[in-house]
Image (cartoon, rainbow, N blue to C red; front, side):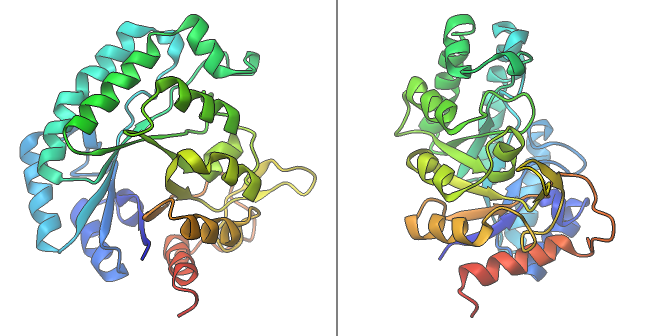
Length: 288
């Protein structure tokens, strides 16, 4: 059965309180990112990781994903920047992973400050920033060799992933099909200009291994994301796409993220994360 999770800091800003709420809300698996003893995941000391692991084990929870922000820089910052800020942190990341035991470790897709000028980001990378490919390959190889699954997630601002073609081409170029898969964050790709449809999902499905969902409502006159909302009230086909993801066996865990967009006047945002959890749980279990 597919499980549901959400980012730990969505549940509560205090890490231990968040763990207790995970138990009460019936979320047995964790997606760790920020707000872990006041720190981002990658900034934890090994001692803090041991403390977190003990607290997680005491509550019979487990870690599904390490949501790192590694590789989320602009390619124009150059190879030395990426090595210092991202690749050189892999050893520490793996030390943390040996303690907290995630199933999968997330890397992010890079950004470019020339996004508005680029029609094909993969060609742009190959022609001007080809060093990025072996860096991703090295990170993937090292993480996989340590026994963890690896994923690359699309982000939502100035990102090199704006279309399904760019994503498919990038995964082809890094040539690690047996060691890495794509995390499809539906709303992030929407914000990059690709409105979520079943056709988009089917194009991306061959590389998807993890699925992130957010709500969001579009403008009446376009497909542009305007308002943040619950999953139940979202403009994109949440139920249809999610049920297809489940039927295809693409994502053993589905992660709920907070919706982006502007606060809609008069909209009820009370307990929206719990509402999203109930909606997604009900959808997965078929209304049982």
